[in-house]
Image (cartoon, rainbow, N blue to C red; front, top):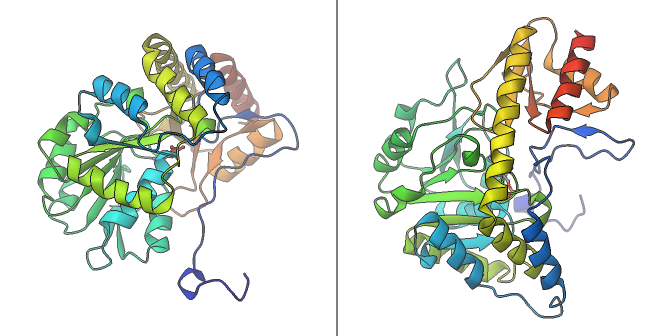
Length: 350
Ligand SMILES: *Cc1c(COP(=O)(O)O)cnc(C)c1O
């Protein structure tokens, strides 16, 4: 740390992304990326856009917004596009978490919520999951804080129903409820249709998981016109050109190529069900995941030992070094050959 760093930032502990080691080639099942390349149409549009990189991109992302509005059944002014959903969440913490009101989220969830809260000096409450690692909806009713819920939750993969999400939105009409739907395409029902009924509801989405564009950094939020206006105030006070031309074009292609999207998501779901069955048959317990990963533990091996042994065999999974999660590892669902390699490696380790 330099002596020049602002006092308010001197205590920050930054988010630690999943490791991306370069020492050898790994089967990467640790950061929930898609095993599939982007849609060929998305790649073609991105290549075309490269020819215009001398010009600033459209800060409103008009063409992309129009396509998304049609696809999700909302108006373009209900949508904001950003450089990743991490950036959308950043804007939401900045816009909607007055330090007086603060933020609330589960104790076990996406690790970035806490980092953003600390970055903006927002008071936050971490609400414990129950012993099954599930979210108690009643904990969030009338909580008087800005609520952040990942649905399905990470790293458990456990899904809340649309009715439960609606209860949380209805139970907090004086506060914003942010639903982070990074994994919703792998088995959940989106809360986007509820935004016309709840002007406090903000749904955050990403192109990184189900649309194979993690490297393109593209995310968006859907909410009432007023919430989106507020987020635009933050966006235009930070970096109006946050979505670059190539990612904007790739995003259009990814949304328009519905057939490819369905094929990829369908295959991941099949591979997940296959992996769940295989892991259960060799003694693992798993949370009921509706995401592109599984969260697993085995009575005969700790999470850390499993993680280290798999890494030695060239397979990366995610391990969380905390008291409640230390028995588990989180495994991204990849291609079927990656899953078979994983299962063989685990059998040898056990
Ligand atoms: C991966 C993930 C994100 C981040 O997505 P990006 O758009 O790549 O920043 C946000 N929330 C959750 C719960 C995630 O798992």
